[in-house]
Length: 335
Ligand code: SF4
Image 1 (tube, rainbow, N blue to C red):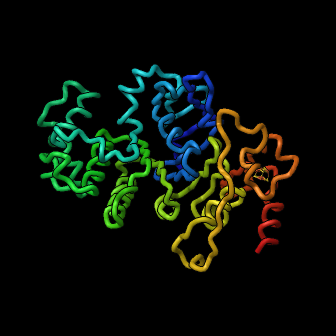
Image 2 (cartoon, rainbow, N blue to C red):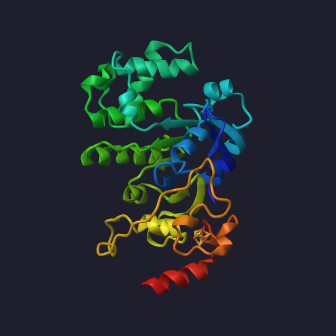
Image 3 (cartoon, protein in one colour):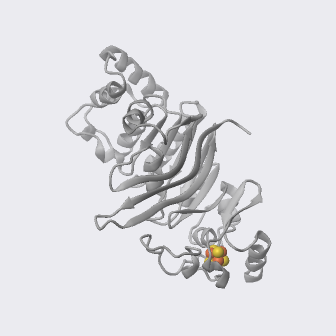
């Protein structure tokens, strides 16, 4: 087993609404990411993917609140650190985040090099202009971005170039973990490919040690990540290798999710697409038992109690009252 770079233990975070209602958007989630590996996070909108990303960054600003659990980056527990210390010594250096639609967040009135200066000086106010320029040039060169981009304003860049620039700025301080939240959505196919290639290169060159990739585009997850975690209603429902998660999912929700997409790999071209009926539960009042029960065609009385997390082997974890054999028997029967 390689060194664990990111470990999340039983993490729970919640939103508190203005009516003082708790919304548990991340509920007792645990996982590890090893050095050189990437983890994809899949699930419907509102399943907790982006809240998990913000929680990992220590972004606990109302309405989001930390409740319990641990986040350990390269042996350092960050959940017991003061928010100011997290901002100064963790964000950008240990863990960096590319938020959704980040390319639109670039300040249009400042040149790219000035934006980079802001990031570097937020951590080292004494950094000299020339040093930062040199650092930015080297980083852009490694990432295949022309140095001229540094002198441009965001408005002068195409969408794909802006997104690649955002990625370059995000990793300028050499973070150990990079979280990319829908980094290629809203881009054309060519730009998507370039962004994905760039993220892969970052891992291969050791620029970052581990990556978390969030996207709705499941075929993309399969091609980019080593493992895939499927979330449903704030909980982890399945964690498995990318191969197992896509081609051999066990949890009924993962099965439904993977049955609703086309992965352009051999053997799946003729698969009939299916849809998952219904909608996710209201997280202000989640069901006491399995959160997927209302939509699960295999639900039974026993599903009214919280299902266990099972670990049947091959590094796979899933949450269901049914054993692997029972689920496989059901799926086999349905073929
Ligand atoms: Fe379906 Fe029950 Fe398993 Fe939930 S615990 S996924 S309702 S079979």
